[in-house]
Amino acid sequence: MSEPGEAGRAAGAAQLPRYAIAFQPIVDVARRRILAHEALLRGSVGTPAGGVLARVPEPERQRFEIGSIAAVLDAFAGTAPSASLHINLSPEVLLRWPGTVPELARVVAASDIPPGRVVIEVAEGERIGDADALVSAFAALRSEGLRTALDAFGTGYGGIGLLASVRPDLVKLDMGLARNVHLHPARRPILSRLLEACADLNVDVVATGVENEGEYRCLARLGVTLFQGFLFAPPATGRVVDADEVSLPPEPAPPGFTDPWQREQSARLL
Image (cartoon, rainbow, N blue to C red; front, side):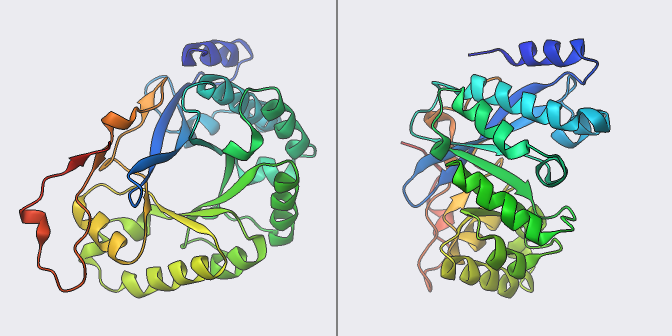
């Protein structure tokens, strides 16, 4: 497995920003297992991916993003054979740069990871501009055997209409919807409608940025079973998180049962 510093040195040699690769697990609480790992770029001082990409000159964006994906695939190979790998790709590179999907398919084919285990995430929260282009791009990704996800879903420009057109395999709820949702009852009907639409379209849903048990309990009672966030495990730089490092809160109580959280302790993932 390549060390993240190797990717950073290669990027620096081409006058592109150095970066490290971190992985954060996506947890299936119903089956009490790690479903997938999301790869996250980090700058040399822990800068989030957005800060790294902001330093890439526009003419180099496609080359940088495809190159970083190749580094992610290399770093992930052989680490978690039963889990999927989530990789972020900017809408700009996917929709505006010719040849992105064939080039992406090429680097996946050159790796040891089957395409069906690779999920390409595109942020719905960014202004996509051309929904028809996104529909075509997602269809092209699926034709290469890759899976698709809309990230930051629910507060962007397309909403449920975009979901129905694009039909991704999975959506990741915008963190703004999950943040302290247990303290904001007005958000729950919105989430319920989003979850109902996803269920009708056979689209899986991940709640991201979940940091406390109140958020988890509320979302789980609404029907969410896939979670990502610091409550379960923070990102780990240069490696995937092992199952015994993931913390699972107790299962939510059935309707009408009073606060089981006072008598149960957070359990470790088996």
